[in-house]
Length: 261
Ligand SMILES: NC(=O)c1ccc[n+]([C@@H]2O[C@H](COP(=O)([O-])OP(=O)(O)OC[C@H]3O[C@@H](n4cnc5c(N)ncnc54)[C@H](OP(=O)(O)O)[C@@H]3O)[C@@H](O)[C@H]2O)c1
Picture 1 (cartoon, rainbow, N blue to C red):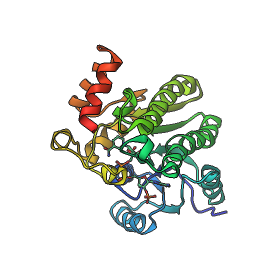
Picture 2: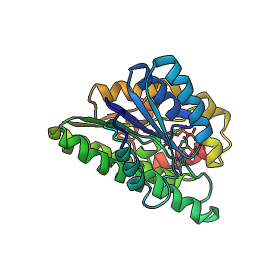
Picture 3: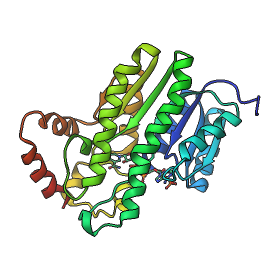
Picture 4: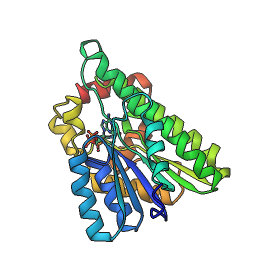
């Protein structure tokens, strides 16, 4: 065991790209040591060098495929073996699958379910237990605005994010007495590799609604440290989420189909 790895650590999944990179930069600036986890080791190496130099923190890289069954247990085993105390977990890794459900690749969808829901749940369980035992910890779950509404063309992806939203908000209340804060961040469309990975050629209308990843990540971390249950970044996204309370679900589906088709 690496006994030199003392102090407080944050674990960020999906730290090779997009929102994960910005979460890492924000937490590094707060002088937290970081574990970066994703498959893209080269990108994380570059980020780690940047953060060590800029902030003098320790950064550990874990190359791992979190869509593989058992990956959450493996990641926990690795951080335990290094003797790291994870006080903050950002469950951010995820991807979408855009297009007609029946035309999509089943394996790609199954891996998405495993990554977006199962790995996220298992990581929350594994690290949440340790945090509760210390009566202290913070967990940020990255959902999506699409978690607020059934979304044709993103049917399975939106459903994974509905799961994350409901799971995280419930845990916020359930774990509060144990000293563990759980916060759900539900971004709208954000300028990352997400749309490309999803196979989504984004329309001009959607591009107008795009937020920058730094602003989205800052909103999430601020909400986490403020102990909030849930946050939607950006005024337009907030209005969209709120509108789901005011009008029929069939109307949202039609709007989302027009926007996402
Ligand atoms: N951008 C948006 O419009 C948007 C909107 C709402 C919610 N979100 C959510 O925000 C989160 C971050 O996405 P992003 O926008 O930053 O997209 P991104 O730039 O594509 O980043 C996705 C991250 O997830 C990691 N990841 C993907 N598959 C993985 C796997 N099998 N194992 C481990 N890590 C994996 C990727 O790393 P590797 O490929 O290196 O493994 C990458 O670091 C996701 O949960 C996404 O659903 C995004």
